[in-house]
Amino acid sequence: QVDPVANAFPSAARLHRSTEHKAAMAGYDRAITVFSPDGHLFQVEYALEAVRKGTTTVGVRGKDCVILAVEKRATPKLQDPRTIRKILTVDSDIALAFAGLNADARVLVNKTRIECQSYRLNVEDNPTVDYVARFIARTQQKYTHRGGVRPFGISTLLGGFNTDGKPELYQTDPAGTYYAWKATAIGKNSKSVVDFLEKKYTEDMDQDATLRLALKGLLEVTEASGKNIEVVIVQKSGLKWMKEEELDPLLKELDDTAEKIAKLKEQA
Image 1 (cartoon, rainbow, N blue to C red):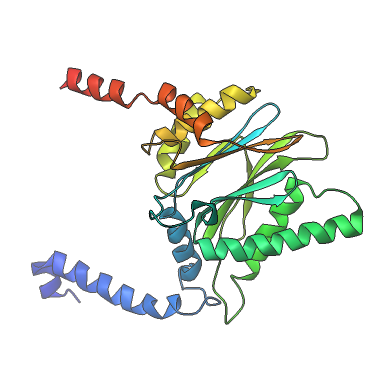
Image 2: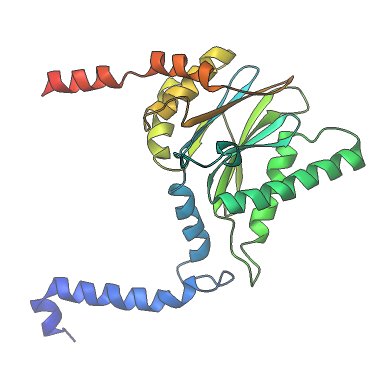
């Protein structure tokens, strides 16, 4: 039977159906262990949304290094900036950068550090970055199918070396999946950065070229300076944290915002 009201007011009918659908789905975002009828785990999707609102984080793999670069939010004048870290040391030669909730990152990183120490004790060898990525993904996945918990609201980028001594870059997300990348970005505006990296990435870049590409990626979406960027170079010899005085001249050299504005004015 044809509904005359629906025919007369099609937009109102669509709105009504949409409201009914939302009402039907509303109960499924309260429990972490319950799938919605269309196959979604809403709490995991909300955790991914928390990641998308986090600070921009870039990872690039070079020939013999991995560069992790993170945008830091401005700290209050009286706060000690050393207490706000967006890149953390997981093991002696593995660094982790994250986008999302700081408190969740602290808990997950502490679990990972304990696992790394346990691995050293049992195997008498350094854990590989692949092993650490799998452990983090496994831990994050555990928090998607148990009652009384919620997913970790962070995605991570891990830089380190495999058993062959080659650099590796891994990403994990709140769903518990993990991927190996040549270059990627997470957090706010990550799509724009990934598009830029896809155009500019080349194989077997040396350390300087890799660092410049990571910084250029960040500059695509932020007004970067040495104060609001944190960069670590993961090398075979260990981790090297870049200082503000090293970053400032490099960022000034790479920043082409003024040129872009001039081009836009010409086109207008």
